[in-house]
Picture 1: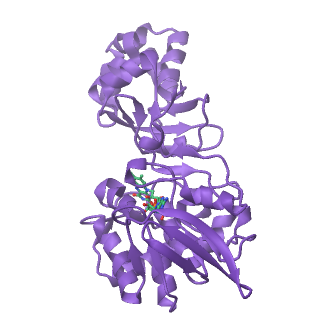
Picture 2 (picture 1 turned 180 degrees about the vertical axis):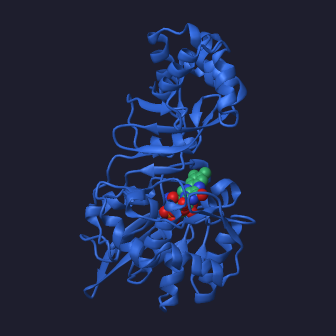
Picture 3 (picture 1 turned 180 degrees about the horizontal axis):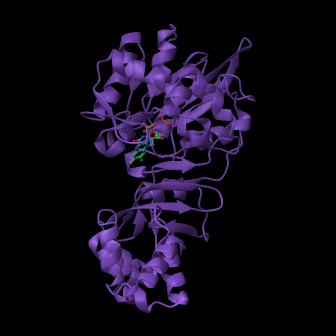
Length: 383
Ligand SMILES: Cc1cc2nc3c(=O)[nH]c(=O)nc-3n(C[C@H](O)[C@H](O)[C@H](O)COP(=O)(O)OP(=O)(O)OC[C@H]3O[C@@H](n4cnc5c(N)ncnc54)[C@H](O)[C@@H]3O)c2cc1C
């Protein structure tokens, strides 16, 4: 995005990438259909030590600008849910748009290019960068670092961008895997294994955030959009609260069934109530012995326990699946080091950072690509 927009301004532009092809994360995104943006992009959809930093770029290159680009290329797309836009066909359609924009404006792409060293040099007071690479030596007035985050190392992720920042005296925050499944242990893991593949609409929350989305049980623990979203707000050792029946007041319901003298088993009563979202096995496994009880026989304590298990389950993950499956990296080059207008490093004229390598992390739903497009386009106006 940055290369195409810089080249469109007439800048001589070279993209160097150590992978065998560019845009691999685009190709693997959104289940192969790339959730390329969202109709409802707001600064609140981003996490950063400075929540204001993203505002400028997001307002100068909006989702509508990217949609206009996609429309210009005649790409077919659809809204899945909550404003999330996906390709009708393949994620490669999005990559092809970017490649064709680069080609049209004369930006050159050099793959299989390992960077050995970067130096800043000054000749006759003209500062420039010298790159020594496996494909030869290059020099440039502006060097844009767009190396992304640490997730999925097998797809070309590397810490190079953070190392370049540190080499030039820029601060980098701690980094954590985010938008990542939780792992559980002990008896909860046993239950998750038995429920693997079952999806339930939940509200998951902690003191910082709350999300109403689907949860998916897996062989390792919990995943699905609800869990990926809250993982970005979770820290090692903390618990999150999960409500498996967010649209029902279970305590009141159990009390009213008890006063009616209901003698059907709880699992059958709940299933009648919500047979779609609470899959067959879920109640048996989740409520265990309680599933066979009859409301007429319930004590107040049992009503409390059952409603707590269903509506306020305190889940303490043992960890996350880590970089292997995380969609993004939380943290990165500190935004205080950069101009929010140009993305140039304040201390190092000519050095720019864009995209995920910066300490700006989007929610699930097309927000991370929108950040990559917006920051790339903005830097492309100044390099
Ligand atoms: C499985 C998965 C699915 C995702 N799905 C979505 C989605 O649907 N919607 C969404 O908005 N976001 C999604 N994301 C997040 C999104 O892919 C990233 O936030 C986005 O790609 C970041 O763009 P970027 O240009 O900053 O970095 P990247 O796209 O990661 O690109 C970095 C580039 O730098 C190159 N590079 C790295 N190190 C070096 C080095 N040492 N030398 C040379 N080159 C190097 C890499 O090869 C790569 O080509 C997903 C991520 C994953 C992992």
